[in-house]
Image (tube, rainbow, N blue to C red; front, side, top):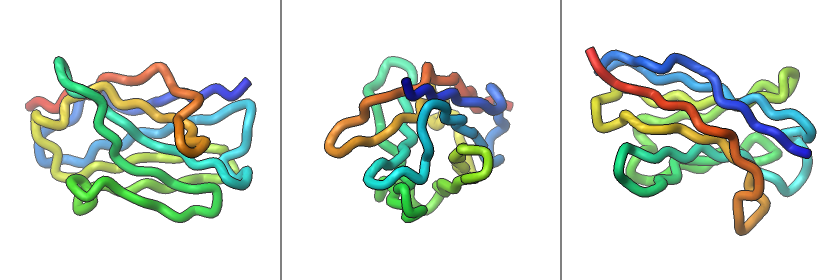
Length: 118
């Protein structure tokens, strides 16, 4: 059973960088043909896909967030991370990590609320 767990600060100040880590258990992030994604959901709004890192380390980002988003990984810890720079209150959301088994996301973390506020 694959499990994903998000971790990171719950409060970030405007203009700073939001950093979250997803720890994966029950499966390796380097297993072929799987990818690992970040998704967010602002309060009262729908899910927004942010980006993905594939099993080979290649990355793809949402065009609307590409200039501010970076996804990386630490294979020794079986973790992948999200960095979102220059945050504003509009970046307040529940952030989820998920495994991608194309074309769907079959395992999700429980999500973590990040609030952007001074």
